[in-house]
Image (cartoon, rainbow, N blue to C red; front, side, top):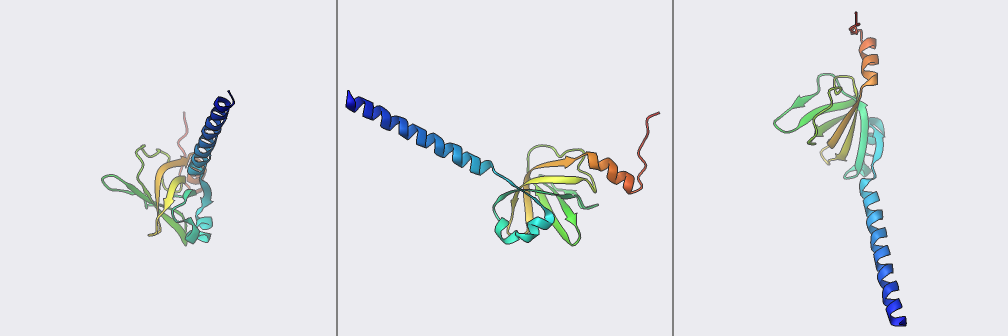
Length: 140
């Protein structure tokens, strides 16, 4: 009877250790570090290959498309970051000039941030348009 209990205890321990390892590695994989463009420039050498979430304002006139990808620039001069969006989800409608964009992905050795997901803050869109002198349409 003791031998059967020992086998059960060892088997249970192996299962618990395996599940703990899978939970830990899954947590490490999904962990992202939030940075602004100036903060990313401060640790650029250590940021290569890390999963990051970078936030910055879209530079006016920088958004371009090719067959599969969308390219745009975020930040403010002189610290800007070129972003290449390779995700499958459509871009948000609020990703316009001067909008605050948040890109999740990895920084490549060529200095281009390859993003697999993009989100844009829409509340600041209206504030920035108003500050830039763009009239906001009023409902009548």
